[in-house]
Amino acid sequence: MNLSLTRPLAFIDLETTGINMSSDRIVEIAIVKILPDGTKQVKRKLINPEMVIPQSSIDVHGITNEMVKDAPTFKQAGNEIKQFLENCDLAGYNSNKFDIPLLVEEFLRAGQDFNVDGRKLVDVQKVFHMMEPRTLSAAYKFYCSKELENAHSAEVDATATWEVLDAQVARYPQIGNTVDSILKAVGDDEIVDFARRMIVQEGKIVFNFGKHKGKVVEDVLRMERSYYDWMMQGDFPQHTKQKLTEILHKMMLAKK
Image (cartoon, rainbow, N blue to C red; front, side, top):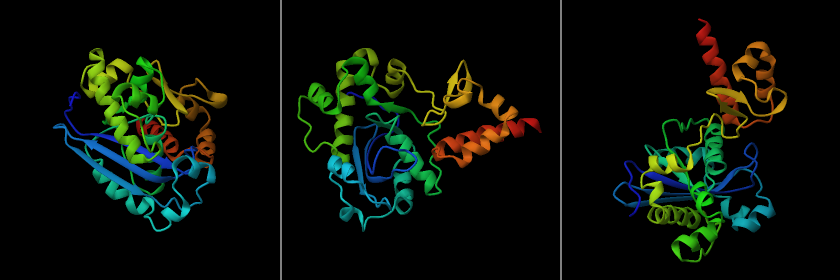
């Protein structure tokens, strides 16, 4: 193994009902967990999304409503998934923008907290786009000299992503072979909320949308408390609402 790990790195790939973080759901999850000694552990589950899977999504991943009707819901499977990911850093392909945010949303909807604070988030797509901008299938062919068969099967995609990162470490010595060195090379996302409704600018958390875009979140909440209420009632991801609430609570505690 080319990659040097100090703790497990879990490669996550989701197949879903769509790409809307607020309304779409997971229909399949695959996790390929690589331990520091190179041992691989795999968990794959079909999930009942408790909604109809659109035909457009079925055409992509091939998972039908019939296939998931007797599968566990995410609420039923969540604790098992959470335990499998315990003490792991997280990785995937475009995972910082899709897989991990949607996974966090599912945990929150199920009433289970899944904290990514303190975990390293390695998005293999960022390494690839920095070095050789391509799709996952092309990345697999380029780095591993193999064709990616059964793409959009969650376990196949997650395994391919792990193989690509391991090959990238061998090909690009300048990115190093540890999670920390890779993140230093490609940039470590400073995430407030995964939907990026809030971002960090010059060390302060600011809104990244709407009429208050670019304004410091605490300043807006201090001057226009109704904006918090509007966001909490609006069609925003649960993770955004959670982080906004944390900011408000921190402000209130600071007043005491």
